[in-house]
Amino acid sequence: MGLEIDYLFHPRSIAVAGASESPDKTGHTYFKNVLENFQGKAYPINFRAPEVLGVPTYKSVRDLPENVDYVISAIPNRDILDLVDACITKGAKILHLYTARFSETGFEEEIQLERDILSMAKAGGLRILGPNCMGLYYPKEGIAWGRDFPIESGKVGIISQSGGNGGEIITMGASRGLRFSKVISYGNALDLNEADLIEYLADDPETELIGGYIEGVRDGPRLFKALRYASQRKPVVLLKGGRTQAGTHMVSSHTASLAGAQEVWQAMCRQTGTTNAFSMDELLDMLVAFSCMPPATGVNLLVGGGAGGKSVTSADECEEAGLNLLPIPEDVRKELTTRDPFFGAWVTNPVDGSIMGGSKLTPHDVITLIASSPQYDVVINSIGAGTADPSRQSRATRILEHTVDIANNLGKPVALVMPDSAPENVQQLEATLALRNRCIEEGFPIFTSIGRASRATSRLVAYYRWREQID
Image (cartoon, rainbow, N blue to C red; front, side):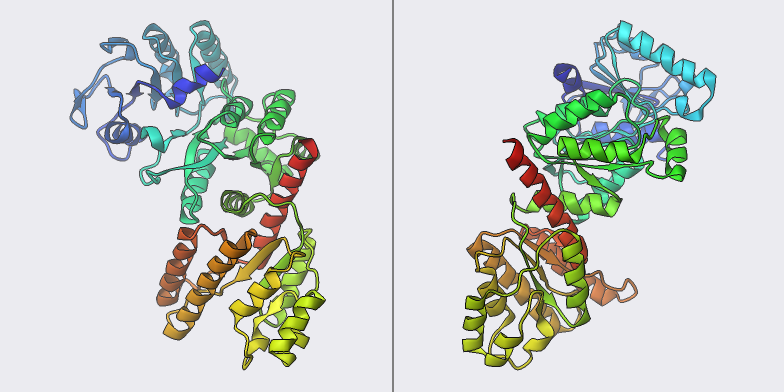
């Protein structure tokens, strides 16, 4: 299986059936991306136009001057059986069907067409990705379905039954510092399915973390084995679509999948060590945590930067996430009191920054001293939103620099919190973005709230505790 799928990621040549001169056609986007970024041979297939983007076309895959490894289809479904036959004739290993309107329509004629495609492909040794999918984003090989995806490679591998959600993971993840080894949109999973792809990524040396969006499961027992196998090697974080009655109905019309009971899915995640996300935001938060934070198994948390009521709600959210907000140790409190009797007697966890006015201690002094206690395993530090005010911007930058110092000196996992700025305040938005990018450059996981940071941290700890139990 691994060698067969390998042609998906390492083809020597790619043909695009339906390559087009028209910029609003998907066949144009696919061929343009292949032509500009792929290092192997690129062939446009178009039986009408003599050339596409300056490259002479071929009327059929059969007319190519040599065999081809990988074919992308952006042609109508009525022409797919002939394309499958042509691919087999030219020794193709992978056919990616962007082409849609198959079993997801619910029409018997289209369902039968899918069956015929699969039967012919199997007989000819051709593997199918899709149909009804965006395909592959593999920056190392210059293969992408999106026009503005990052060109840099990373360590996160993604599978997504939905091309739209896969694209959102790429673009939103990139804005938070994530970079990807491979992203595969696989649609109706007529042939290659979620279990195949997870097994491949589990053994992929370029992938250190697996994430994904799944709507339906083709083979439950096989997926169970694939998830168990993968989770024993690297973290796996999945978002399951179709949890509600409305979602289940949409799944069947989107990718012709059976959503399955949510209780069964949750049980599978628990038993296989898979981290289960409940929203796209949560999926991205956990991918950021696993990408940027070192393995951790301790649940004792120190929170810095809260103020007033924010400290109260933060404490609730952290406890609800399963983390322990232990009180300040007596030896640490004694040291703080020696330096500032008033503050030392009042300080709590979360550390309320609003009571530090006039104190001889700096926020850096306080967080460093408390975080150095061996009773704390993880630190979450809020540095506030960016601001156009120079003095406040300077303060936020200092907090970031102090946090870098804490992380380097203490060797503990540290997460940063920075709330979003109001979109109508352009200067503040730009300042927040600049500060957030600085955090990303320093390698910190950045979250928009203490609650989101604590939930992602808790799931990271739960995974590494599971790994300890099975090792």
